[in-house]
Amino acid sequence: MPGTTPAAQPATQHSSLPTTLVGASPKSYLTAPAAVEWIRIVGEGLAAHPERGDGVFACLPFPIIPDAIRALGPLGVLIGSQDVSRHPVGAFTGEVSAELLSGLGSRFAMVGHPERVKYFGETPDDFGAKSRAAAEHGIAPILVVGEPERGHDPAGVIGPQLDAAFGDVSDDAPVVVAYEPTWVIGAAEPAPADHIVGVVAGIRALLAQRSGESRVLYGGSAGPGTFAAIAAEGRASGRLDGIPAGVFLGRAGVDPHGFLATIAEVREHRA
Image (cartoon, rainbow, N blue to C red; front, side, top):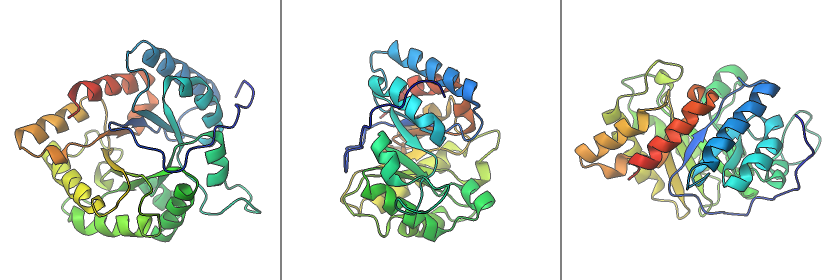
């Protein structure tokens, strides 16, 4: 990536979370030129909006993080990583430590994505160790949770996922939970809005036991139109606690224009 290394901007321990969060994780789709273009388009789009990057975040591949912090950080965009090592700094070749990411200014680290389980064999023990490592260095873990198949009891699956990931995390550390049922990841449509509202409300109830800040997002094939549908369902059913704090785009986040459209949508329809 072009440019010089940005000055270290350590993440503040237990930094406050924005009330609304709209994020993108473009997985491993971006090439170096595409990453430069993605950052440029997102930056220009946000610079033209009165709220700029308030409440916006992006979890990016490690090599892109410094350039993204340099370009998007001044707009208020929070940058995070798609993974983090469970190990401290040391002789762990190929690993990227939470201490290093914190020193760069990274604010979030994804943990528990089903693709990390499917392709890399990660376990609940890994998720707990990674969440703890992130939180200890002022990085809010973004735990991806969800039931593997439609028809499974979400609460019966998600409760243990939260316990495994956050059981050893300081109770006052901020955490983010992204509800992404495995059965819709990569699908053409997200989960039904009424289903999402019920599950988000349930996750909020589970997180209420923590003293620290928490936010619940919806992911799972989310894209433009998803948040508006969820918000409408939550209001129609009187379940405002089931409206998430925002959405977290995966595949749809590869398109910077779609990401910008989703940011505008969440800002329009947020509770």
